[in-house]
Image (cartoon, rainbow, N blue to C red):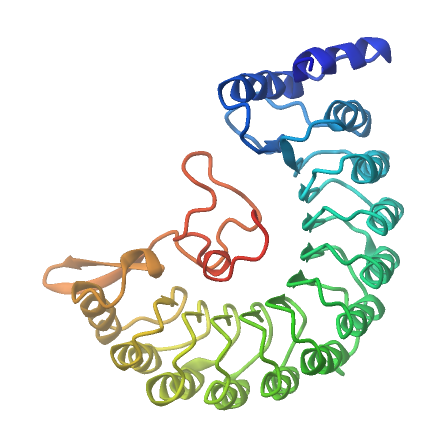
Length: 415
């Protein structure tokens, strides 16, 4: 078979188009990799926010020519074109690729200026696709119209395992549609519905999500970040979790949950034995909420592995209580506390946990240091999903310490 770069140049000249030097260089490197390891399956990464190369972001036409090259390549099982400019034109060719490339299992189109029309094309292409496992549409403004088409697609598609529609401007109607469809769909294991555009104070979205969790016994990972969720919404989810036996990762970060919401969560954690990761970052649970959780983690729960309470207005008393629970509860391995109000007792408590070996430094977002005999905590770049929107220039972007939530509950091969 012709080398990828040769084929790409051929298609460009055949269609009287200029080659994109960024694409050409990446295909050249890929050809070398294929020559060295001819049997290795490959994720083709053409991210437009690459800082190590001179980038010329892909347009819809660039993506068209690239898709022609990829059609018969069985070794290329994933395509990452995040942060480019492929728009609805590129979405049309992405839909064609999904219909004609029977080996693609991962497709990342995040932040590509795809609108409702492009979203509809991709969703309809998935009606017949039987190979794609993970699709990221994050940040493309497909709005309520596109969201409804994706929800309808989940009634037909039985192979997609993870779908990310975070920051897509979904409306309440499409969030309710996803809740309804997921009561029947048995394939989806992870879904991200972060930051929908919701109006009103009724918290209908969480009511419907609660109903879905009572019925669905296949969903493993659920992201409801920025849903304007309050304690009533938290109560709806917790009531459902008494009956749910599959959910392992619950993300309710960036909401308006307070200490009262933690009463419901602490109570359900006494009997729930499946939840392993809970992200409560950027809420307001304060000392009282932290104490409710620590009491349950100390005396009852032995399944939770990771807890994030970043930026929750918790002071020393609550943070120390959480650290004490780790001495009794040996299952809880990851805890993230940065952004709260540390006092010296807090600093000493977490320093002691790390010194004793109970808390691995990779499993928390603080690091102790000492000045003039006093212990302080500094922030380190660890978390449940630090590399959700971006990947580091150097090192492994899927490193456990920075993406602990996805590592502990692996749904989908890549972020």
